[in-house]
Length: 71
Length: 210
Image 1: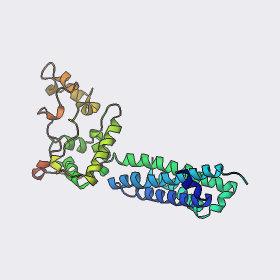
Image 2: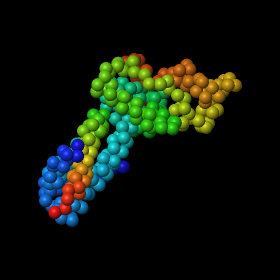
Image 3: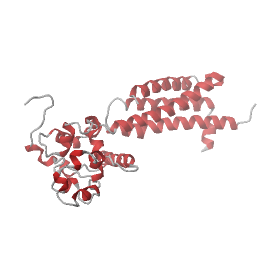
Image 4: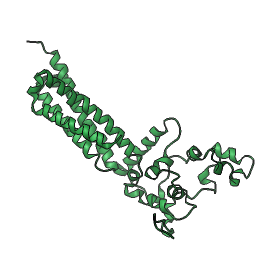
């Protein structure tokens, strides 16, 4: 798992993280448009996992970057 | 929590996340690192928390419960012009808040009652989207209706405590309070939603004078 994140450069990881977080937040915003059970499901099933994945990717990118030896 | 606060924070977070994503070189500066930290961690976490709270609050609203097609008849039963229909009397006379009518009676007034009610709601969603939806007249609560939910409001009220029907026998009141005699199935208040009989019912029209 760590190798996957280490293979990503910091910039690339941040790009993906930004994309995932912003997509997840857009889904969450759309879920606020209408009061309906489907909005609830989409919030929990799509919005939250996307934002969560973005945050995890960002945190891993920081961790793996700090693991690398300083030049 | 107003949905507008969630919307504003989410909008700011989206802009920051996109900026960081598109201009990742900017994060090599101190300001960029701070922006990435706020835009990719702090604000999204706040948004998820506030959004979850907002969704849970919405899930308690009458509109939410009645938005599934199978619940339509239960919504109509709140407008029956007949005092023997318990939910209709409560709804029409504001004995329960109209915008939270379903949740007020169908939550569980015990420890972790809200959690239990939400878990039941998740089960409803599972049936709605993945299961076999029953006919409205076949829908029953998961557990027999507990007097505790009625007594949450009625206990101590003069109308309840001094009602002759509740004092017919020496033990009747004690039986009601201990849930040994159920309010809704004791031939006293046994007309609840009764969605199977709605086709013969007359309905109250709010604002219309007789």
